[in-house]
Amino acid sequence: MVGLTLFGMSLLFTSPLEFKERTVAGTAKDFMVVRFISLAGTNEQIGEKLAQIASSRHGVKPATGDPKLIADRLRWQAEHWPENYARAQGVAKAFGNQSPEFDPTSLNYDMDVEPGCSVTYYPGSSVTNGHPMLSRNYDFPTVTLAEMTGRVAPEGARAMTADPYVVEMRPDNGFASLYIASYDLLSGCIDGINEKGLAVALLADDQAQDKRPSEGIGLSEIRLTRFLLDRCASAKEARAALATVPFNYQMVPCHYMICDASGDSFVWEITPDLKKRYVTDGKGLPQVVTNHLLAEYNAENLPEGNSFDRFRRLQSEIAQRKGKVTPAEATTINACVAVPKDTQGHATLWHSVYDLKERSMSVSFFLGRDAAGIERRSPYYAFKL
Image (cartoon, rainbow, N blue to C red; front, side, top):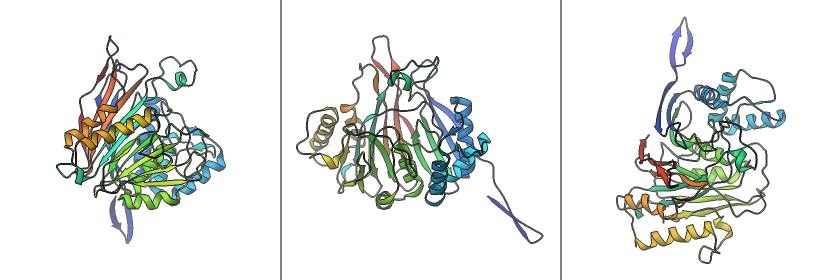
């Protein structure tokens, strides 16, 4: 923003959006194409640019919905999440649609269903170089949404997670952040870190028996992480924000690892009926979370099952290090619970490792399978705020 005084009047001129893009991994012949985009400017400019990308590349059309719910949602964002409210104004500008039914608060593309993931946080005291680290496997089906829901996929349909974006966002309001987005290009975040060293990652609650998607104001599964990166400088601030923030889920209940560069971490959970919220503190020690609610299971006496088996394995691997892990081990330990390389229809779509002190990310992506059905992966790519 540039200021100028003319004849006693103060005038403001908005600088152009700074935008860069490059393909990181994959081609049209691979399972996924990963793109890195960097945006620096006003939140409205950022929202407008993201809408243009979503429309031209992914065929996203203006979303519509119940006018009252949309109006309530926008009012809530204007008061409690002004960064995303401004980005929504950019979406409205890009689509040129101001009708009451128009919903500018998301840019859904390729859609989603429940993931299966494993996340480990290492406070600096448990890493040999003193750097807090977050290591996450993002496990997900490799099919389209139509196939997942028993329908015939349209010709040329992309798999649900075939177009992830690594986003570096530097808005005029809100913290700068580096994160991986999929499903919603405007306000979605699967995992990421902000300039203050706060890192976040979402995981599905696969054990929930009563899954009834809900609509409402506030935050949905993949918006909660984006909200925290915009608004919170520490795990302490995130705890306070999550104590009362309105929450609903559109596809599947999720829980979240939230941690910061000081060594503070916690897992935030909410029951599928949205009535109870839980915080499980890491207490300055390595903290593990997979796909069951920590608050509802005794960690010392877990039942059998995929999520529980992965949880036990990660705890065991960390315990074997007897104190501290190396940065390399913080990366490789999660490999022991990755989706097997010959599994069909499912894969660890990315493994991301965040160094909270350096505000950096290293990530490897799933590119497909060879003739023998064995997965092909990209090398680890490094990004830094």
